[in-house]
Length: 327
Ligand SMILES: [Zn+2]
Image (tube, rainbow, N blue to C red; front, side):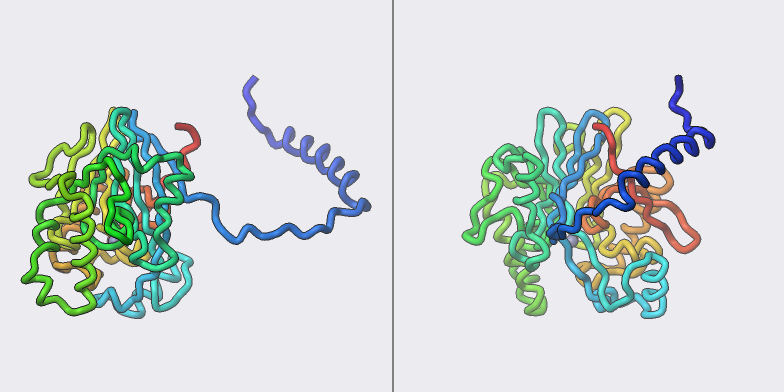
């Protein structure tokens, strides 16, 4: 017999249950002992299937981006988008720092590493959450890096500069390696940007002989292909995970502030090495993902950062994926 719940059944059940609750609850002394508040979240670990592959979203933490980092945004437009998204109005927008582990069955791949100690106390929790997910850092074969910014590579190496993933190769687009190791460019940038170069170089040094340069788009691990998405950095790269009917584009930093940039893809981030190119790339990816209905994962989308892009009256909108009930 099918488990249809009809109106009558529900009412009958409700009455019966209600009667029991009344008898048990009212008049009796309810327990008054206060329960201690947890004060922290459960581990930032969520899984989904992509075909035969298992993808685990591992939270590194969060950062608040001051609105001054979006020089093209207007205050009234920001206020309206914050209202529409039911997030606090204010002079910053909150972004997650997400990383992803892809288990293809014969390879264990980590995409980005969060920020380590480089972005303050609200981030740098990759190691704890990997442990909670049951992932041994020594079991990671390949680390696919979307770009060499500190919130993506800070979790790769210790304070002393040692590789925290002792057996993994580190794969990075060659244009990012070229840019962040260029002494002439580093000499010309403002002082507050120099630490970006220092961190990028430290990550490359830690993996030394195990560094793999990614060139033209193509398969980097069986079932995972690189997609050069330049603008945010010269070598910024997405990774497309395909297995059977499953298809997930891990797009790195196509979006930094979901509340703002789906509706306004032209609101570039001050840290983009080429803002105009980043805008063109963002629009191109939005168009592709919405037209082809490709599931996407983003490093700064609200954790676990997995969803779809839909066309909207104003630009685009983000449709987050539901929790995966069975794997
Ligand atoms: Zn980032």
